[in-house]
Length: 482
Image (cartoon, rainbow, N blue to C red; front, side, top):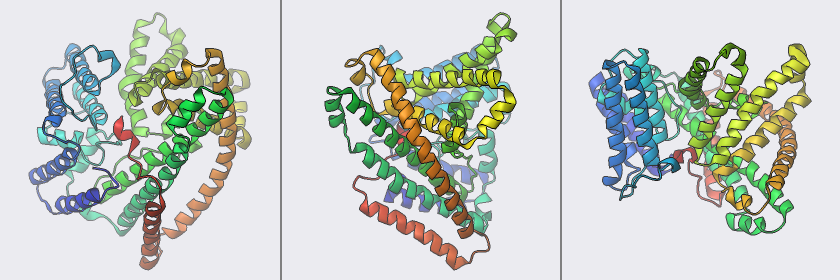
């Protein structure tokens, strides 16, 4: 069920009515279960296609319950290994390609985010952070909550359960809450049907057939096209993801859930690592808690004189973490390596720059607008080139050009796209300042009801107009496939 479809709108209205008029924890839990089940079932063509993910959920629940009763490291390891292997098998990762495939078609939509929640539950139950027993209905409602099933944000069970148990919170919304929620939902749809659709149209101007044709001709043409395609796809992904997050968080408010923010102006990031503290925030926090921290702790335990190698261990931890993040996005070793190298080099640069310039000089340098724009441009450029492997097979270039040519072209494209992006960020900042001032005036609490309604209706008309003039269909949610 697409978030931009008529069926989803009808589903939300029915779910909202049911959500607000049920009473009692048991009744509320069952109604929420039916809502989540109805949404999830829309992705299955047949009942047989639902069997693998149902088995995965039942197995995961058994392992979560097991963690309540047996708190031994070996059991924790077996539980985590089991859920990750089942997940990898169903997702058909290359390292389990030796195993026979299931003889029928099934869907894996939402499995990545379910996996994150299951690992969080197993670990937190084992460590004692979650003390109350979790019923099967509550487990399903948490893991398969329809608003965050396919896109995140990744909500901690402790935070979810507090709002889940406060079942009447959706009835206590203020006028500002409702207006803000609707405004954010409409803003999200403007990003999806307008800006995301625009950039995917620009990206598809030079389609795959054109790309494959030019790969065999001149290297300069390939480099120029690659830079253009990388940037347009990056902004398509940006508006696509942030748009869906706006819709999800806005709907969450109306349903009585305060979902965590997943973005904090990532285009303002002046480094690779800062970008990942602003982009897909809940994913970054999850990997820091359940992968990076345990890995660094383990490395400190196995490395002799670890106090002398704190920096090296940290760099290795960042490299490994972003290697996994890259592989999670797509089974492409190129994306994984580029993200891992980006994180490691960023960490190394932080250390060297402080040694060379000192903290005071670096602070002044970071406050310099020109330096800041260059850093932001290079950050966007590097990430745009990296995520190109979401849509491009590296073998298309690797087997036609030498490694030296590829390496030189990479740095040239990075520099040129970085410079262009830096100039674009200057314009972006000016537009953002104007938009923020306008937004504050329009959505001021003292604004009349008529003016507020006019503002919301204007957003709705923008969505309708963008839907009518767009050449391509409304872009699907990209992260749904991860």
